[in-house]
Image (cartoon, rainbow, N blue to C red; front, top):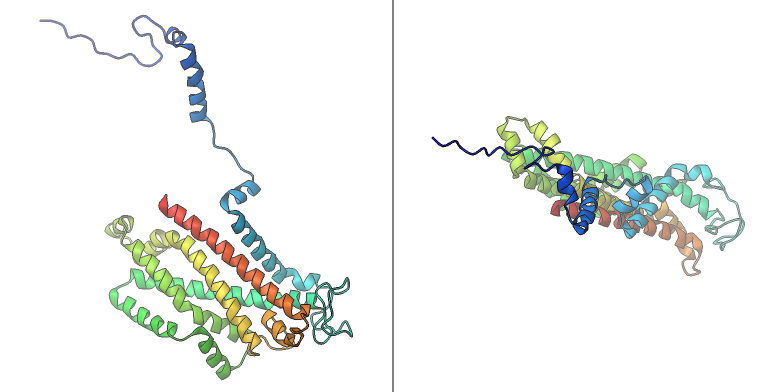
Length: 326
């Protein structure tokens, strides 16, 4: 019987046919040897590390960074504005009404001779603070009920959907006017009304996103494993809704800023002696024909806040689409 040939392949690093590994490497042509280390180096090199500023620039586009700076600036002003204001918000500091820009009054004076810079710094607490609180309430409550409708049975989805459809059919400004006319204007009431007006929109967005995610395979696998509804909603569905819901939160914030400013312009928002930016526009409307800074600067503040948030939202939407394509 003929013996079978030995097909044993030597392990890398042992001698093959009497030739050592070093001799084989020595026989490689020079041009190939020059290319090989570069490829190995590129393969094995560690990924570049960025400092926090570089990571921020990499994460945001130029317009996204501009929007982030605007939003962070006004958030900072809302927190520390009264501490850095040159005068008390309601102090009568000048005898000149609708005064122009000056060193003593950088943004002029209002219809009573009060410093407009101080008024805007104090008013940021109400415009930014109330809008932020109402947007958080609207997004959290709407997302909770949207998830509940998506993961629960059909009858729960039907009841919640019909309830929020009835609420969303009422225009936000009409709802706010009716509620404030009935119960009066106060800080808690304004926050509640603004949140109530935009909960249905957040509900519809979150429900739509959750229903799309519930049909994916990994959610079906979790159900087949016997996971509960709370686990599926909290672990499998909610984390994959974060980017779209953050973009929707920013949109709700912009809408609420405009709603509250509109109510204040009509005299139904923040009441004297306090004032938000909408109130500052209303009480100084008499200086519009003169181009007084007292009526222009609050409008510029509202515009920069809303434009900055829109730029930031657009950056979040693009990142969300890029993650989805990946």
